[in-house]
Image: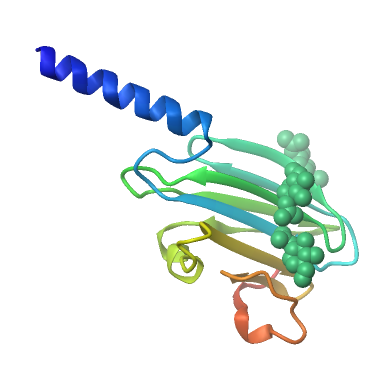
Amino acid sequence: MGAMHNLFTLLTLLSLITSVTHACFLTAKWNLYVISNIEDDIVVHIKSGDDDLGNHTIPFNGNYNWSFCDRIDGHTLFYGYFWWGSKFTSLALFDNELRGPCALSKESGQHCYWLVRPDGFYVSAYNRTFDDNYYYWTLKKHWD
Ligand SMILES: *[C@@H]1O[C@H](CO)[C@@H](O)[C@H](O)[C@H]1NC(C)=O
Ligand SMILES: *[C@@H]1O[C@H](CO)[C@@H](O)[C@H](O)[C@H]1NC(C)=O
Ligand SMILES: *[C@@H]1O[C@H](CO)[C@@H](O)[C@H](O)[C@H]1NC(C)=O
């Protein structure tokens, strides 16, 4: 009873410390960036099972970024709904499959970059310009 109580107090304290320091409790922290290379404002609505990040307008070469802690059960999912003029497309911005192409830099934390271009949506673990470094980018989906 006493030992359980102490363990509970310790866990509560640890999760409090990690939330104050913006670290994650037991899981990895992910930083996601959605960069637009479209010479027009686009709108993205980002949602997960637990969070609705709402609508965001991204200007040409601007970005929207957010970070989150991986779920303990590993089933983190973020979906993005994109509008560009009359075009609309939705795709997963983070899920178990995307963990692979994004998970590289353990030291500096996990970063996942999305590049929205007129021909579609590219992902990379690195923030590189497209024209000279297209091989860093993987095309995941075309605009519908
Ligand atoms: C988000 O933006 C889209 C496109 O402009 C719009 O159709 C939709 O109603 C907006 N949703 C909210 C919750 O504002
Ligand atoms: C992330 O977004 C914030 C605004 O929400 C912005 O101030 C910041 O510069 C962005 N980070 C990067 C690396 O662009
Ligand atoms: C990506 O890198 C460029 C410089 O090459 C920088 O201007 C931009 O802010 C970076 N964007 C993000 C989201 O880190």
